[in-house]
Image 1 (cartoon, one colour):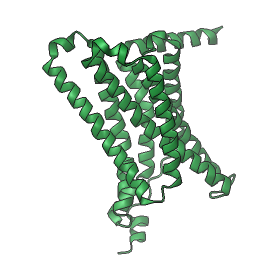
Image 2 (spheres, rainbow, N blue to C red):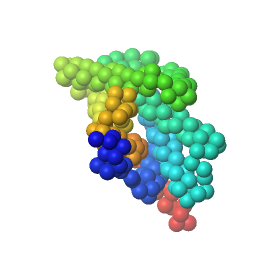
Image 3 (tube, helix red, strand yellow):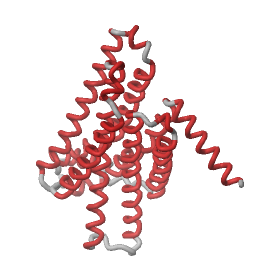
Image 4 (cartoon, rainbow, N blue to C red):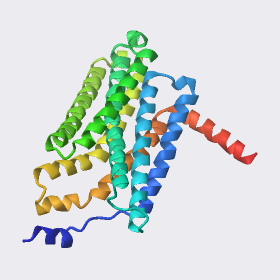
Length: 289
C-alpha cells in the first residue's frame, strides 16, 4: 500500500483553527503576566519558591507569545503577505523555534529548582534560610536562563542531526525521572515522619502544588515528545504517520500548559489569590475613574 496515499486519505492532518491558537495564546499570556506582576509587587512572595514559580511563568509567557506569533505568520503567509520560505521568514522561524526550545528547557529547570527548594523546606527546615538565600536564588536563576538560551540555540542550529534530537528526548526523560524521584522520596519520608512534617504545613502544601504542576506539564508536553520519538524510530510507517497527523493538537496542548499553570497557582496559593484580587480591584478602580 502506498504510504503517501494512506497519509492523505486515512490520516489527514488535523487542522486547529487559528482562533483557538490565538485565544489560548492571549489568555495564557495575560495569566502568566499576572503571576509575574503579583510576585514582583507582593513582598510576601519574595521567596525562593515564588521566584522559581515566577521564572516558570516567564517561560510559559515566552511559549505563548512564540506560538501565537508563529500562527499569525502562517495566516499572513496563507493570504500572500509573507513568503512561506523566504530568507527573513526562515530566520524568524528559527528564532521562534529557539524561544520555544528555551521555554521547554526552562520549564524543566524551573521544576527541578522548585522540587529541590521544597525538599530543603521539608527536610532541612531549620537551615532553609541559610541554604536558600535570595542571593543564591538569583545565581540559580541566572544559570537557568543562560543555560536555556545557549542550549536552545544549539538545539535549533543542529536539530537536523539525529544525535541532537536524541539528546533532546533523553534530557526530557531523565529530567522526568529525577523530578519523580524527588517527589516519591519527599512523600515517602513525609509519611514516615508525619508528626514532624505536620508542624510544617507550608512545605507539604508546596510539594503538593508542585506535584499538580508537574503532572500538568507531563500531560501537556508528553505527546509532543512522543511525536519526536516517532520521527526518529518510524518516520515512514503509516501508523506512525497517523499519530504525526495530530501535531497541531500537540501544539495546542503545549500552549494549554501555559494556560493551566496560573490557574493551579491561584487555586493552591492563598497569598497569590489575595494579590490577584488586589491587582484586579486596583485596575477596576482606575478604569472606573
